[in-house]
Length: 201
Image (cartoon, rainbow, N blue to C red; front, top):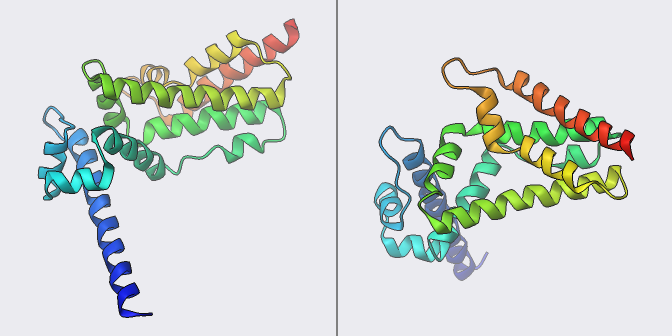
């Protein structure tokens, strides 16, 4: 390896490590005991870097939040391959709902706080809505594989069933339900909704 290429590789590795540290700092702020703040200044201070370093890595606060969402999904090992390769409708819907329940459970407090903060933060609200629409798009595509023309109301109901709000409400707070139990309730209801729609067509 040439000296120039070696230095470039070292710089790239250092930049990636700094980026990871900033994302960890953002998550740490959200998971902390005090009221969370997600601003470029707060993340820079928590990660012990300059504001410019945050902008260099993510471009903007929105870019930072987008990267944080991707990081949370990566931490949870989120993927829909099992749903899209399932042998039948029941297995596909179970895999889809279980994937999102597992994601919501992986960082429940952080996700709840992000959604709460979105009420007063238009940029965060927009980004979360976009992520929710990505879930709707994936669900619609999955149902098209099971039914040539999925009913729009079926999509809407199952989309709501797989939302964080539904997961959070069913899990409860004082004595939280086990994740497996919540998964069974949501996936079972989603299958019933789909089966009933098929029978009525």
